Amino acid sequence: MLSSVFVNCDRDDICTEDTPKTPLMIVKFFDAENPGTPKSVNNFSLVLDGEDYLLFDPVSTDSIGIPLQTFQDYTHYIFVNNYTDSLYNYDKIFFTYTRTDQYISRACGFRTNFSQLQAALQTPTEGSWIEFVEIISDSINIIRPNDTHLHIYH
Image 1 (cartoon, rainbow, N blue to C red):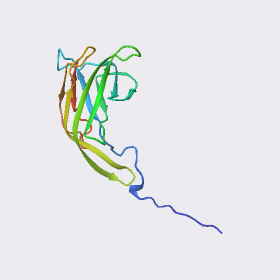
Image 2 (cartoon, one colour):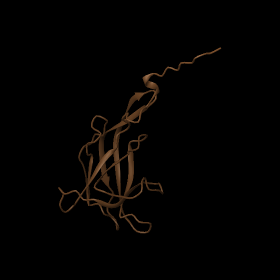
Image 3 (cartoon, rainbow, N blue to C red):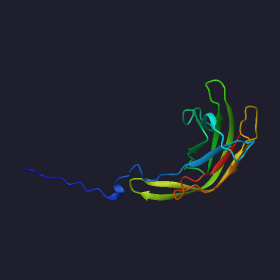
Image 4 (cartoon, rainbow, N blue to C red):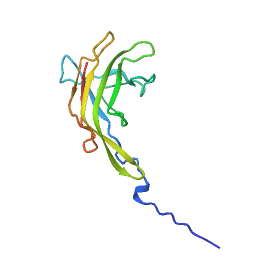
């Protein structure tokens, strides 16, 4: 006796890799002495304030996409420049925003869009490397996921 089983998958049962998820905050770095000129950060990384580990291995870059916390209306990051095991420069930037969850599908769940983004650079201390920050777009959403949101001048 032969029997067949057919499994029927609805479109909502699969979340493909190309389905847009929560967008990243796009940050670009510029020369503080010549604000129109992009300037790479050497051995750059991030630490979530209160944690003891880097979010990613150090990279040299003039722009990067970073995640914001989706379960609260703020994220505090330590921006690290010239990271080595024993020597580095860092600054803290405090981000606040309003979150809006958007349903994608049963398989993918929700994504979070952000609005009213604000950034506050902690008062510089010894070892600071960031001169100032500027919000370029206060809305981080899936409609325009590649827009630049923040300029950092160093």
